Image 1 (tube, one colour):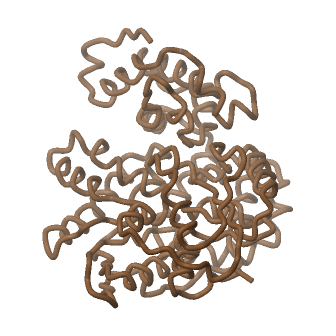
Image 2 (spheres, rainbow, N blue to C red; image 1 turned 90 degrees about the vertical axis):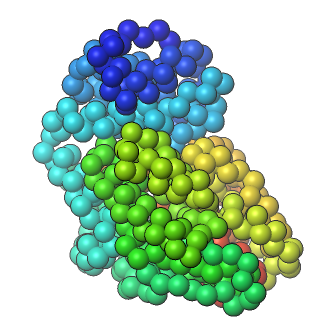
Image 3 (cartoon, rainbow, N blue to C red; image 1 turned 180 degrees about the horizontal axis):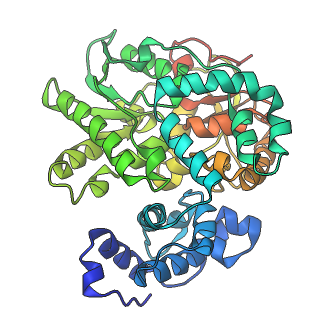
Length: 433
């Protein structure tokens, strides 16, 4: 793709990077075949290629974002399926992140849109606020269907439907703290406690700690750890996301420079994609560039780390057929495609791939709250494909996907680590018959 940015424009590091990405695109259109929104809407501007044209025009002309750009960029899930498909290696993730930050800086959203985005950014990344909000949501949840039918309140209704019956209370797995290994010590790792996940389902981190301790790995949840910044980052709120990331980077660097870490373990693949990108996010920050690279360099999804430990095969605790749903942030964002399935198979489970497994379930971070109609269409498509393999249980590696699919799957939806913990001597996951 030809570009015509000025030297003054290219002095900005984000614009300079976006210009490189734009020049990589060859207009081939392969991305349209795997883009969920293009499959649903059939609009070229709702494909990666179409959005690239819009973003190029906006950035090249140094224009503030307009209604058309915002509509089509907002519809993007950031599932990154296009990056897996692209033969030219276009880094769409960095381009659309830049576009979202530009939108946040230059576009005046309608009041309701601005308010709901501000509320999400001010509540979800903070556990105490999120718990309090969920108490109110639990009370209002029975009215979610009615609220969703009120013009202008569709997003509020979607948020209420997603809310659990009641939030979980604080557990030891939120940390900070050290969880020593129960066997001969073979490693020491930091575990990202997270923001949303421990409130919605603390059993995920609890299962992770139990299993790692049993195989000889000490687990630390670092003092001062914050949200990884992913939620704010993908809404274009760069100041907030970078501040949260810096706090967490500092917490992990303190552990790395203290007793040392073999890895930083992430159990929410959406967070993992962002943390592994810290090196890029802070490339121009003289105080954090090296620290961010060090953190990204040892960040691993829990399944990546467990695969490196070479666990022995075991007999499954029950003869279950598991439909493995690979979160987009896992298969496209981190390019982890076989490790979770291999581990489940070694644990004795029968694993089935979900048809159209490369297509997003519609969760996509905050997407199911901000774009509920499109999200529900993708959810229905995913649930239909899951039903085709007639599983006893669904396993996935992302809390957002679990929340999205649990209501409607007809079978338990659990985190992959919960099944692995069970197979290697832990308790049966809640909800499993």
